[in-house]
Image (cartoon, rainbow, N blue to C red; front, side, top):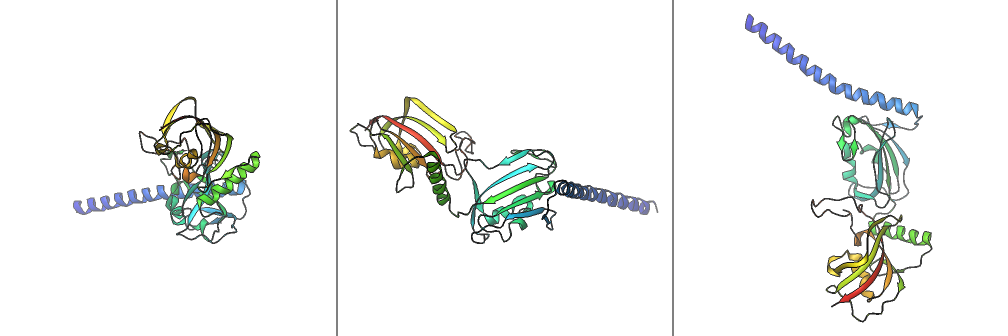
Length: 300
């Protein structure tokens, strides 16, 4: 009898423990749901739909291009904000953009982006309110810096362009027009402007040792690197591809400007730390680069 009573007590304790855990998990969902509903009401967000996961979303612009399929590569920008105080947790760099396959985008945050991206066309834009338990959860994140149980207000804007080089070329042309610059477009898609023709006689190839003065900028004018004291020496075999396409057109003494599409610069990874092998944040993914260059000397 005592053994039977003990078994009953153990079973009841296990049941209570299981129900307690389930109740705690359910309470996270209900807290998120209540907070999102209050946020929608407070900000008069009409047109929001709720999917089966509890994500609220709205298609702000259906897009005008072709329907995006799972296997399609999508170029896009996005921003994640707090619904509590509007703090921005992450935003795509103004000097670059994100890109991946739609199938991967749909899987983000436990599939919370999936339904919002259904039937979206290239150039489309959506807004999502992602519950905390589907986003960064109770642990939050250190990179980006997101606190515990944060509900994420997300804006995703897809590009009308399906290839990075196409979008880069449009951006470069818009940049040149805005600055009133006239540049020559090389077959490589690098644009260049000659300010001072060179007077040297040595022909430059990838094995030439060249001393440069240079300043590197993003198209918004931000300088990310510079060496103007005449001590920077390198061969073309060790520079980004965009330099290698244009520098051999010149000789010592030349001063010129080059605007380089991202695939001939640091590409979809951005600049990489030599010590960690990871993106270092100096040059973002898919960034167009603008260089002023002076060839100080050439040694063959």
